[in-house]
Length: 196
Ligand code: MN3
Image 1 (cartoon, rainbow, N blue to C red):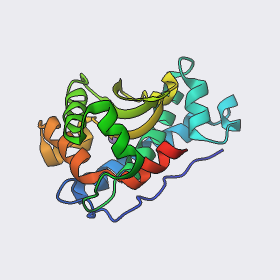
Image 2: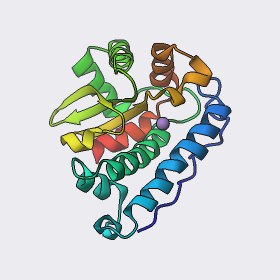
Image 3: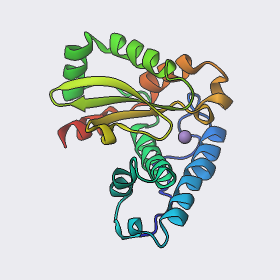
Image 4: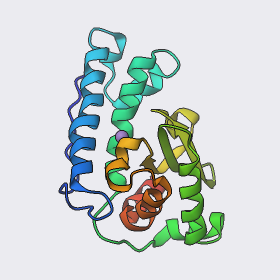
């Protein structure tokens, strides 16, 4: 199967001022596109070509083929990341609000911990809110790794590679993470993921 770059679910300037059009232009049209292109090139003529989703490819390639794993997982991670965000402030409501209050005391405590864990990822990687059985947890992963290879269900994913925030925040990764969680997360999507 050949994969193509999914379009962003909003205009490139829709997330300003929290994430600039220039960042989205480079991040989606160049970085994400490159992961898709390399995935297609690397699976060509291999057994991975038979698989019909990025998830099945990176799950199978995990600890078996680093080149295919890294590119297919990054292609999947970025699509998940774009879908996690939406323009305009959103109120945290529904089941996710109850669960965040239960597992982290309240939204502010959750936001602080999310930013702290994301800031503590050494080098490139991701920070996630995951469902692990009945529990909600915040976890970080290096490079292309994601919670699915650890048997955990991702609810929120945020890219902490420098290409994700350097144009807008330079070295201020905690500020980027705080803005992401407070101003960009689509809580309707998070509630849908929780219900799946
Ligand atoms: Mn990225």
